[in-house]
Amino acid sequence: MAVADAVSTGTMSRPVLVDAHAHLHPAFELPGWLSAAASNIARGARARGVAAEHTVGVLLLAEGRGEGAFARLRSAVGSGMHDWSLHPTAEPESLLIRGAGRLVLIAIAGRQLVTSEGVEVLGLLSARPFIEGAPLRETVRDVMGTGAVAVLPWGFGKWTLRRGELVTSLLRSSAGDIFLGDNGGRLGAWRTPPLLEEARRLAVPILPGSDPLPFREQQRRIAAFGFVADVGLDESRPAEGLRAWLHGLEAQPPVYGELETLGRFCWNQARMQWRKRVARPG
Image 1 (cartoon, rainbow, N blue to C red):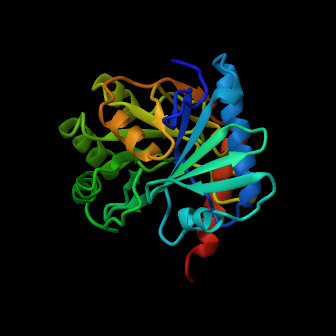
Image 2: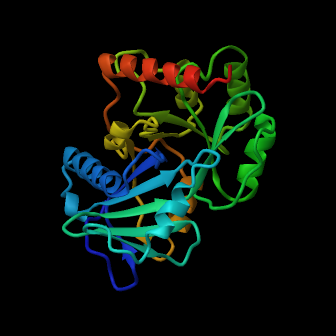
């Protein structure tokens, strides 16, 4: 992979580290979120023997309903925000982010959908709306029909019983068209989930991401887990280039970052269960 400065055409021929499940939750503070992303991307680059200043970090947003993350970023374009500046591109779904003395970041819009069966589907690299609450296969068809990247992300307890059967069936019938997703919140000490092993057997690429939880301190996890893309991106149309690269991907891209420790995993799951109980009516 070439390591070079951006050339006059605007093509960034640099290592690209991608967080394929990024959240900008309302509890997160934007400058701190960006600083954490840059730091984690830099750490991932150094672990691969690459100078951080020659690296591009890409944050693929997976917005839940009403989250408004990309709109929040877009509203910061042109405003002075500590040492960060956000710039529009030629695409409605991407933003270029520069920080003084930091590597370049790119944020790209996308959605996190929940099907009628309770399965999560990500529609990445697109600012277009998708149907909510439809059956799994219809949701995936809708995402793919827009040219977006369809990902079925792993989540604790979310691929069990009937939902696991549905994901397995879709994976086996649609290999080559969809991706599975891993996330940095998974416990590293456990065995790899069987469906991720099945994806590897079927040569279905797995796209990892950080998937930070909606607690303030979790913003430090943004971009701490992801994959490396061997692609030169045009800074005016980065989503277009990455989307084409992913649709042509035939092998598992290298992964960077680490999974959760036992203590943090148990604490995170306990907090999420408490949050769900508090939010439940009655």
